[in-house]
Amino acid sequence: MPELPEVETVKRGLERLIVGKTIASAQFDTPKSFPNAEADVASFLAGSSVVAVHRRAKVLLIGLSTNYSLVIHLKMTGQLVFVGDKERFGAGHPNASLIGQLPDKSTRVTLTFSDGSRLYFNDQRKFGWMRLLPTPEIVNLDFFKKVGPEPLSADFSWQNLQARLQRRKNTNIKAALLDQTVVAGIGNIYADESLWGAKLHPTTLVKNVPAAKYKPLYTAMQAVLTQSIAEGGSSDRNYVDAEGSRGRYLNFAAVFRREGRPCPRCNTLIVKTRVAGRGTHTCPKCQKLVN
Image (cartoon, rainbow, N blue to C red):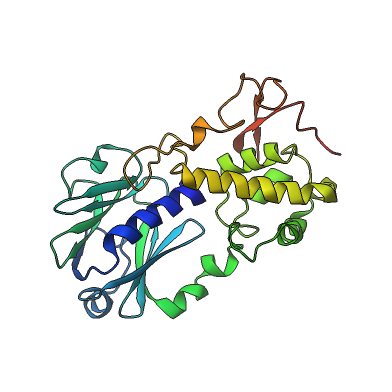
């Protein structure tokens, strides 16, 4: 599943390419991927113009001139592919649909714009979805009511991070970081990288994290997310950025997928274990468990 930097790069690509375009029509193959009433599509999607593209956590929001929005979750195998006369980009799971003739057997939704360009939502496993909702009502969705703050927002401080993590004081620090109700958009890669940056062992219980560690953790989290966005995200084997090329962040990762290789800080060999049900990469010297 894409993490925050990957979805942010998709958002930026869509923002550049589709804002200002008018949606002429929408076709879909299964209501599971496009769970919208026909009357709503006719009244609030067809004929509307794209006014903005936003991201909240790992979800994309395409704002429309009708005061409705398309809420899109790519899940594991979702793609968004824009095809115009002079430009094409693919974003998402890197199978042949990114560069092949569309629509194909994985195409779930096709948005056709008035200028003839199209935006395809492809999803092999049909876990993703594209919902049309009144924009003011989006904040009332269960997901949006529960999801934590954006880690890169200007009003999110290290004190906020500490307070939110303390809600999970009996949980290990990695599991707490992965909890989307604590902070939005942090997945496996960036949890490992942030914990290495703060010299925190991933199995340390939140209640045992020294108070002095929260500011370094916040700083490390901000740094790895910012760098990953600049590098187009991480490929993570199954994700590409908004220009259709694999993200480059893993070329700069300190510990993720570097097991058996030297720690960039102390040269101790990185080890891989399993924490919170996820493969976890740690420097056994830099990241000591605190009991």
